[in-house]
Length: 399
Image 1: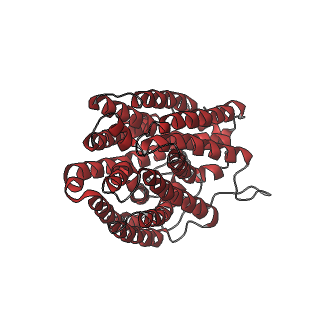
Image 2 (image 1 turned 90 degrees about the vertical axis):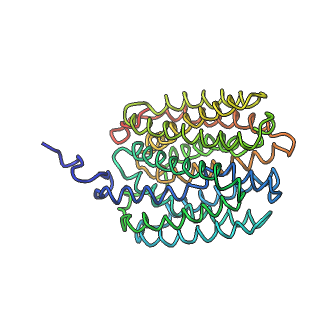
Image 3 (image 1 turned 90 degrees about the horizontal axis):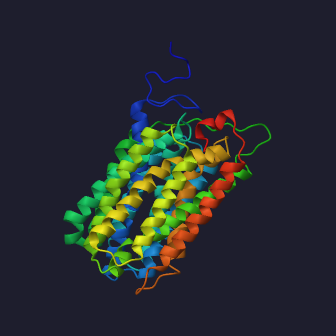
């Protein structure tokens, strides 16, 4: 006999609110994929802008920081202030607005690029808010986060291959932004198929809508931890150049890393509910430290590409488990609702700090910065893990 709490004809059974259909779930994932497409190709597109003298080396970090910060702030404000109503039309309008901004960037340089990428991030943050809202309401959020990360990485991989093989060798950075604009227009289709609304998260009597203290600590830990990868990742092309390698190696390293991320996301989806999140954090941290050590050497192209793929595998295997970490710290799920914003703000903080430790001649400072941030974030996560008190609502996410 099937219990009332088990899914039947629905693909997603919500722990908060009613179940939604498979089409609606897939469409909501599609909306979020469009919001994160730029992140997957950001190193090569911003690197191309620098090669075309439309951005400085520091400008690479600043542009990445501003776009990610715009996404994080928009996602956070939407999660705190907006109700998940009229989602179809919010998705449609945001997708069209993002396409217009991407096309405008083809005519920009310097400060204009920074302003437009900030605006793009704000629109992307609204699209991501829709998808995160669905994920945190499900019974197994790490599984649906894994589905989301795997799907969006597949899209990033496809775009990265298209850009490297056909678009950017002929059209440069402008070709990359035009491709992003086309993808944004295509995002109208999943937006129209997404659910019109999602149920509000429950609030206990006497509590506000903000996370409790442990939830805030989990968010801070996420910001610091994610900042480590963001600081190093955005300088992939300069690090390749300093290893004596060309832009083609950096582009190959990017798309092979995305391919590895697909495998990591698929593995995370399959292992959701079966592996402890803290174990995943430890393994992924060891992988990152090893990869960054290799980046400090003057290695051949095949090794640079291989270790970057290893970082991609570990990074995306880890990403879905950040949600159960937050739910373990804050079973109300209010912190988890802000998980996307925290990851984006961390992704913005990393490039911002990195822009302070690099020059046009030397980008190796980002490796030391990445190590320091990663270890600091991991220490806070360990403190949360070993001071938490298990509860029935968070047992599935235990470390």
